[in-house]
Image (cartoon, rainbow, N blue to C red; front, side, top):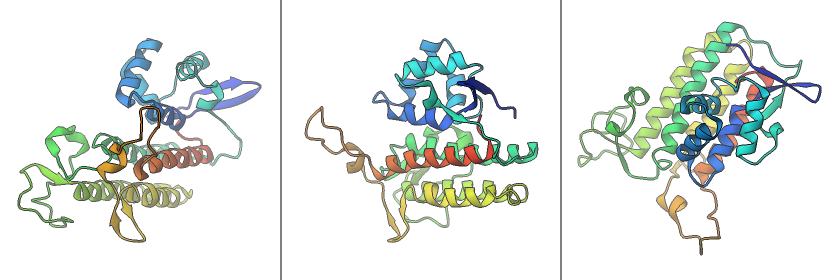
Length: 255
């Protein structure tokens, strides 16, 4: 997959999908409304905005990156990362292997975001795009169910079971690419990333406790001008975006 580069101040840069993702998540209007407004303001399709955010594609020229920066009232450099000669060179097959794993990771965070960060007890699988939950089994049918419950609805999955199955799906995707990613060191980096940010999104590993709680994202702030503190899940999302950007910088990815 080719990488779009931008010349700025005598240096060469790549687009940072992680930086755009962080800016989108940081808006009070919410990601979906923000992306629709951004697409309208830039006269591009919503699909294009989503692909920029996921790092699948990048804006075609620097002028579009500057338009993005103006929309978020930030500097152009915020959306860029310098391309360096020290980047580890990956083959085309290794690049595609990385993108397959990255897609599964992105799907996990998308589903987490669209479940109110897994804070509710049970979810109806029919409410999600089938392609994203194709490997998820309702709690009633899943032999490894964390919490067995006869009262679960037919297509219902408990939050803990959903998280466990999504995490295992990411692990399987990464393991499938191990022959291509191990020799360059990317497999180990992604394995550590998945353990810390996908598994650790909802599980306190030291205590073995479930973390998501509705009070963490809906608690009173004391007034409309007093923002609530970030929940554990929102903090993990921000840290995960930064960590992926660092990996991308070392391997020249996501541009």
